[in-house]
Image (cartoon, rainbow, N blue to C red; front, side, top):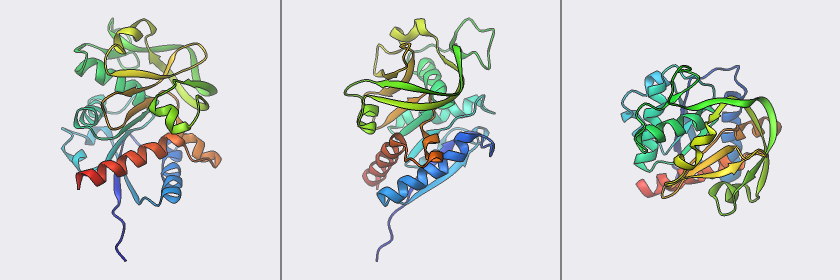
Length: 239
């Protein structure tokens, strides 16, 4: 019997066994593998090891994982740009969401001096700034936009998700940032951006919340499943 071809997923971030999201990611991927029959191989790639991004060519998908500040911000941004421009399925959660916004602002919008307030607190061009209300270990509702890829993944227009973050998009920049192919796909109850996706891309989706953590409670995260399915499709089309 012919063995199934495995899909390879790069987990870009700096692994820490004490981070709940990092504990959850292998569990989430294992649950998806069990439900779909897809053979999944994943590799943690520390941000300093990304380099020019050439090594990412070996993967069918890229997941920029939580727990920033990253040891090498440029490594994270290089991986995100590789996925965005190379049409490689991408998922960004928490810190991955923040840095996907930063990469898009710098390299697509041309805001070369865009910064993250966590690493450049004195910058006048910080587009990722402290949240008015910190979301450390919060569990809150998210409103998903009709017709969005994330709403399709959940099969619903609302979800409740866990957070562990203190930073998000600077509100006054929302209209400008999302005027092009990058679109908001989820808001919280205060109409703050909590999910986004890129039109014209096979799968490029990021959330400020941490959907993977549902796996620690015995639930398969719908968004992780949708990401894996996109990776499998990408792997099949590239063979």
